Image 1 (tube, rainbow, N blue to C red):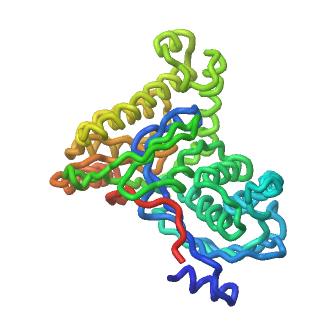
Image 2 (tube, rainbow, N blue to C red):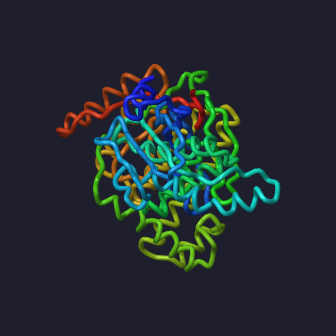
Image 3 (cartoon, one colour):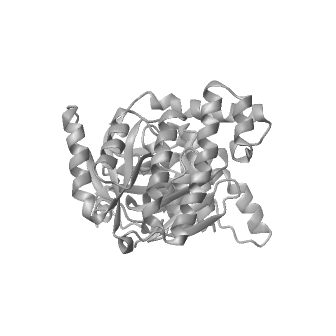
Length: 386
């Protein structure tokens, strides 16, 4: 395993262990997580692997096989770039230390405080795909530290610590979906989550038995305007909820009445979030009934809502979705935060090549680089490998 070899080369010793956490793709339920709504992602076969050993001096030494020079951090505040995601997890777990100590005193056995570590990271999540490599990085570090330092955290608690790292240390106001999917995913299943209660349920998602594939269409593009637009969309939702007198848009039960009281961006964001939550519930009902082929229309509706009401699509995503459907996909939509990244397409086995040709042809007509297209199957969540 090359991450172990790299650890030996970097630190002259064997790692205490090797862990893996996957990236994720979201089947449906976009921009609903930070509105206390419903999501239906699943973990992917690709992710981030980490070889880790603890250190008693509190120093953090990091190396990524995909990044440049190794990083040594005497303090977490020195972290920059990709190292912020790792340092943020350390900070989140260290800040929870007093609670663990109190729990230990009360006989709850919550382990010891988090010190330093030697870490080597290796990842194979496709670049620019919007498949949550950052969440996989956070979760794999949290999973390793949980075991090495005997913290006694549940998988959801690890996901929440990873989310805090991204919110508070990196400065990205993401919801809990990405980290939860990475931590709690199961092979062959999608993860239904209520983002308010944090209740989860694994939903069987066996496409092969229905003669189907879910293709990821990686546009490979990222539009920089997205950097501030994600936070703006979240603020729009918070403002709309405040104007409607509810805790979150998930609580809107009379959509027509709510829309009559709102205007502009707040009205559009509310319409998307409320209808997207209904689409998640509808997809779950179809999957349970075995009507897997019929969820395509809901994927299409989700994309139109994300494009027109939430306004987070882009030309590359729209062309990917439209050309996939034109090529025979049963449904398609953008997935992830938007402004680039990937789309997904639900495709019958005998139409896969037709969809590939339609999408690549549409990109070629516009002079765009060909997108990467690959099938996605639900994989297991974070776990120890060695």
